[in-house]
Image 1: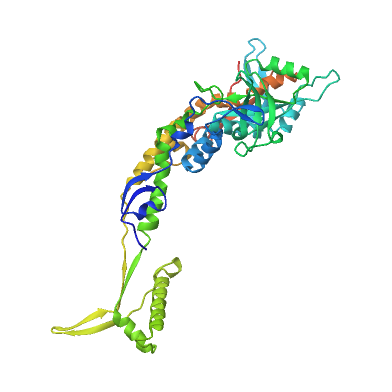
Image 2: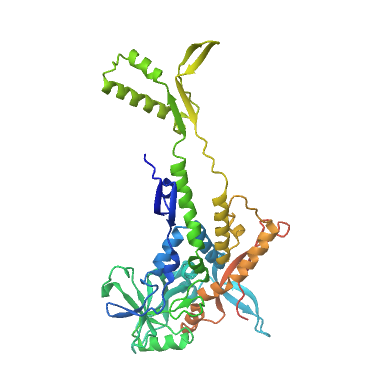
Amino acid sequence: MNIPEKEMVSWVGDKVALYKEVCVILGNDTLTLFDEKKLLPINVQGFRVAPWGVENDLPQQVMAKIDAAEIVGTNANFNWKVAYGLGPKLVEVIRDPETNRVKDFKEVIEGEAYDWYMRNNVPLLLQEIMTDLSYFGNAFPLLIAGDRQPNGGRKGIKGIVHREAMFSRWGLDKRDLINRHLYCAKWDESPTVEEIQGSYVVDEYNAVADIGKRLLIGKDTRLCFPIYITSPGRPYYSYPNWWSIFRSGWYDQLTSIPSLKKAILKHNLGVRHIIYIADEYFKEKEELLAIYKDDHKGRKELYDEVVKQLCEQVTGEENAGKAVVSKMKMMPSGNGASFEKLMTVDTIKNDISGGEYLTDYETGANIISYAMDVHPSLIGATPGKNSNSLSGSNIREIFIMKQSLSKPMAYLALQWWPVVRQINGWDRNLEIVIQDSLFTTLDQSKSGEIRTQNNVTQ
C-alpha cells in the first residue's frame, strides 16, 4: 500500500492518518446549524410556516448530532428521567378544613377522571412531553375535543395525544402571528396538502376561556396546547440552553476525537508482525517440491502459500499461543560455528498510550455535561482516563439538587391538566403528582430510598 507523503487538505475520519503530513484537517462545523438571522416565513402547500432552522429541519439535524455523541444523548435522556422521577399518580388532595392547606394525598383508582387518565395513558404522555422538552425545548400535545352536541358545540376534552416536536411546525397568519400547529413527517420532501395536519393553537395565557369558546363554536376537533422552555429572544421556537455546545465548538472537538483515534488504530496499528524469510528457506522448499528455477509460476505459488500460512499462523484469536516452526542453519566461521535463522518473526510495538486524546475527550465531556446541567458522577461514570468519582454522600446531595432544579420541567409537562380538569368539570382537588425517588442512608431506610411527591400549589 502506497502511503502519501503529504496532503494539503484532509477530512477527519478513516483517511486522515494515511498522510504523514497534512496542512489542514477539516471536520464538521455545527455553528452553521444556527445561522438563522432574519429568517422569513416559507410557503408550504399554501401554509405560511415559521421555519425551524435555515432549512426548516433543525430538530432533525440536532437529533443526528445527538446520535453521534453518546454523552449528549445520555445527558438529555437523564434530564427528563430526573424530572419524571417514579412517574405520575392521580390523587385527591386532602386539605385542612381551617387553613385549606394540603395535608395529605389519597390515590384515586376509580371515577370519570381516573378512566380518562388511564384511557389516555398519561404516564407515557408525560414521558413523551418531557423528552421533547429536554431535547428540543418545545412540546406539542393536542387536546381532543369531545363529541358534537345538539347545539353544534362540543362537550369537554375527551383525550390528549402527543405530537413529536421533530415533525411539528408553527403556521402563521398574514401578520406573522402563530395561529396553527402543523404536523408532518415530510417537511424535507415537499409534502402534499393531505400530508400536513393542521390544528388550532390554544392561548396558553387564557387557556380555559379560549378552549371554552372553541368548544362552543364546535369547529375544532384538535387543540394544540403549546409547551415550551422559556428562551429569551426566540419568537417562534425555544432553544434549550445546552445547544450552546454546538455554537462553542466543544461538540465538534468531542466527536472528532473518536474518528481520529479510529484512524490511528486502523492505519498506524494495522501491521502487527514483520516476518523475515531467508532465501535459503525457499531454496530448500523448491528442491523438496521439485520446483525448478525457470518455473516462475510454481515459485510464485510456493511463495504465496508460505506467506498465507504464516499470516494465518500469527494472526487471529484462534491462533493465539501457537508456535511457528522454522529451521536454523549452522554456518562455520573462523572461531567455530554460528547458527543462522531461516525465518524470524518480529512483533511491532505500537505504543500510543500517552493519553493526550483521552485528556481532551475528558475535558470536552465534562464541559458538555456542565452545559447540560448534569454532573457526570450522577449517571454512574465520569468520562476520561484518570477520573475520580465522588463519595456517596456528595452524589446524594448533588442528586437532590438536580431533582429540585428539574421541578420546572415537571410543571411545564403538566400545564394542561388544570385546564382539562376545569373544562371537564372535575373536582379541583384532583391532581396529578409526580413521585420523586429520594436517596438516603441505610440506617434511615433499608433500601436506601424513600419516596416523596411533588408539592401541589397550596
